[in-house]
Amino acid sequence: MKRRKWTVNEQATLLKRTGELLARGYPISEALESISLHLSENRKEELSECLIGLKNGLPFHEVLDKLGFHKDLIGFVYFAEQHGNFAEALLEGSRMALVKDKDVQKMLKMLQYPMLLIFITGILFVFVENTLLPRFTTLFKSMGLQANFFTKVIYVFDQYFPKIIIGILFIFLLTAMYYYFIFRKMSILLQRSHIVRIPFAGRILRLLFTHYFSIQLSFLLAGGISVSEALLLFERNLRQPFYSQLGKEIKQKLVTGEKFDSILASFSFFEKEFPMIVKHGQENGKLEQELQFFSRHCVTAMEELIEKSFKMIQPILYLFIGFLVVSMYLAILLPMFHLMDGI
Figure 1 (cartoon, rainbow, N blue to C red):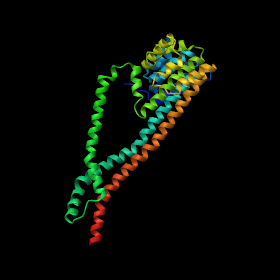
Figure 2: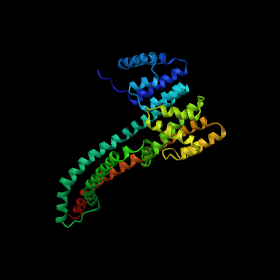
Figure 3: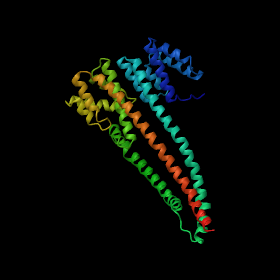
Figure 4: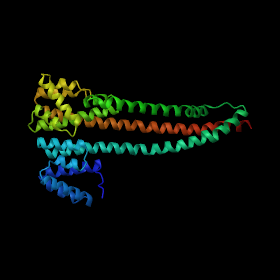
């Protein structure tokens, strides 16, 4: 039987429970055995295979990779194995994954009802514009009545909407060509520098990149690893090519004598405040604490940005749908009222 892929929520929940049990003193094998008792038979079987892999000497991050876990979560486990703060790292990784999954589910739920309304409104619009409105327009013109504002809105929308769709498809085509012929040939660091220029999405990605790098570096430094050794671990993490290349790039620049904060300032995919935080942490000797605090700030800022955007998008969609529906009805009803007044 084909295995069902672990959802992000399932992955995060497994790591969260594992982290909680590890914090209570459980060995990882006993933690997984305890968690498997509350799972379905298929999941129990998969965790049993995990335990066999662990007993055969496989690192936990490789076991999760075989299960098809998300690369970011595997990255949290990989770095946790290096710095030893396993429980806290698993809890942090699961918390971040749950935040992202919650935001995605919230967005899908928020768009479900407006999309249904748009679909129904589209059917109604086609019926009114192609069947009812032409007949009423002919009747009103024969009686010398001028087209009202709402009738003009319907005709303008019908005239420009296909052009808007064609324009959007053309933009998608250009984007696909740019990706195929130019973007994918760039270095992965340059790719990220371009991605963060995208309005709204780029801001969220910048916060995610900064959070991930700062929290992992914080854990590594707190575990007694130097900055140079931490960057070497980033470089060796080949499952995340972006962070691997980033660690290599920073390490090479440090060798040439550049300051750590100056190097970070040269990367546009990090938050502007990040280099200042690093510099301040180096000066007061509490870099790992500053990094951990700033990573929390990034998550909070990201949640606030997404929440604010949700509150803006939904009313705009409802306003557009409502205006279009009202225009369709009034385009027909207002001339009829004029006719009734003249009788």
